[in-house]
Amino acid sequence: MEQETDVPTSYAALQAAITQRQASLSPRLRQIAEYALSNPNDMALETVAQIAERAGVQPSALIRFSKTLGFEGFTEMQRVFRTRLTDNMPNYKERIRALTDGAAGLTDGSRVLEHFIGAGINALEHLRQELSPEDLDGAIDLLEEADHIYVMGQRRSFPVAAYLSYALGRLGRRTILLDGMGGMLRQQVQAIGDRDLLVAISFKPYSEETVDLCRLAAENGVPVLGITDGTLSPILPLAGVTLSVEDAQVKGFRSLTATMCLAVSLIVALGQRLDKEKAGR
Amino acid sequence: MEQETDVPTSYAALQAAITQRQASLSPRLRQIAEYALSNPNDMALETVAQIAERAGVQPSALIRFSKTLGFEGFTEMQRVFRTRLTDNMPNYKERIRALTDGAAGLTDGSRVLEHFIGAGINALEHLRQELSPEDLDGAIDLLEEADHIYVMGQRRSFPVAAYLSYALGRLGRRTILLDGMGGMLRQQVQAIGDRDLLVAISFKPYSEETVDLCRLAAENGVPVLGITDGTLSPILPLAGVTLSVEDAQVKGFRSLTATMCLAVSLIVALGQRLDKEKAGR
DNA sequence: TGCCGTTTAGAATAAATGTTCCCGCATTCC
DNA sequence: GGAATGCGGGAACATTTATTCTAAACGGCA
Image 1 (cartoon, each protein chain N blue to C red):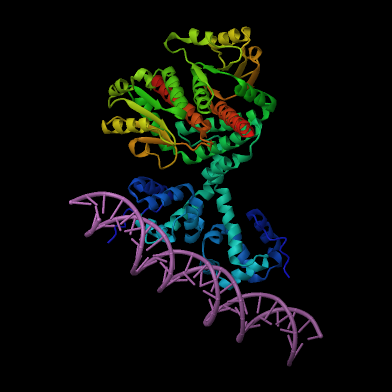
Image 2 (image 1 turned 90 degrees about the vertical axis):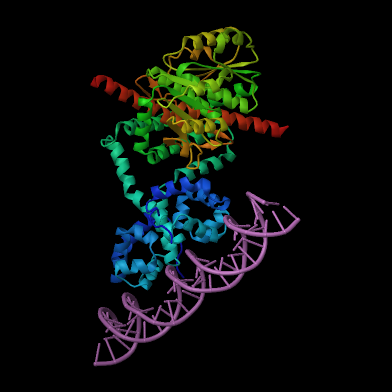
């Protein structure tokens, strides 16, 4: 009575099937779908009762879920989840070796991705080693104490500036993204006072506008938090606190992997500081 | 009566224990030891009866084997075999979430940074494992063939959109960043044709505007390249090609570490493709 | 508000699984 | 050569586990 044709036999197919039918499922079954996709290990190894408890559903709901997907019962579906563990097992070592050997059989796109992933991991580890906690805390101090926060980043640094400005705003900090929109940059800049903070983000080749702005700020006694790279950065002597990141670069395209990691860390650390302060009062 | 001290809890320890005691075991138990070491998958997933049959022994012999190694019974030993599957096949989602949950006790800035660096490395490895080369190449195809490229990303996704738009522009692709500046979104959107491409970036909680725009594009036959997370994303059914990234998230602040890595990889891979094409002519 | 189809919870059930136990067998030691 | 010891086989047992079934809750619709 059931059509057995579309019963998934591989984990990839099962994942696709769940994803596809997820929208048309009843609430409880959707809940299971969500749990199954994010906890495939549990689905593969635990018992119905255990999974039901962890997912917050009844055991019978899991059987209904399995049957909805065309399986005979839960056991049959679990078998597919288990193939994910066994099938990927031998591949794991091979993949790492393939990577180490130089990624010979990879298509262009994924070779580039592999490269940037490797570079990204390196950059993150480098960041961990090189960035001093003092600088980081100093940066958070600046962000915490500033009246208004002005964020500037051009070209490749603009996404970072945009992120910081968005996130700082969400933390309730008064933040202005200096994007020069409508030629208003000069006006925006004139408003910066010495109780404010300029966050300047710039990487090689350093944007003139950003460096100029830093110089202006430094002359007017405005604190500057620099996010930059290298030891020769023109931002360095102008900024009170500088956070240095070395991200990978290929053909002029700088990866922002580590920089973004630093940015989100700054934000969350600042958020915690603000929480604590609020609680302390 | 039994000393419970040396019961192996990791697969490595179990493997060592079996190897070491193999010589002093009775013939039948040695037979089991041999089977266990060469078929750890079976040991982890099959039932006692199944394993017994495949190894050519009695089920009870397996229990004896387990007890000889200091376990309470077969079930307990099997648990160790199962850790091998879950440990070697890390569920990065779980790890990322674990890191996310464990962020509660973070105090100072450097601990937050440590946390995000760890989470970032995990996310990158997850990206490496989960993103299929086909999808990646498909995405590059779309970017290569599109007449105009429209990029949309709101809130936390905006930095990614900004980066892509900037970098695509530098590659000479005609790119429009849909930022809704000056309430021009509707006009910008109306211009999109079916030879163009919409790049939609959205993560939980998915921005309504972005999803709506995808739906509109899909209805009008405009190709959509989605960059999103999870398998439940509303972008998924609307996009021709979807690239899925799982980045860490703490207190509502999503790290863009892995997402940025993917973005720059896309760009550089596209750049290579364009170079090759140009050289070929 | 009242009806009808669907969905869900939870107990009841049947199947399967792990474990125990005892007896036969071989080997070893007296 | 005979008793003792350890090992292994396999059926019986108890427990766990998946599954079924029914009544209740829910949600949509008139």
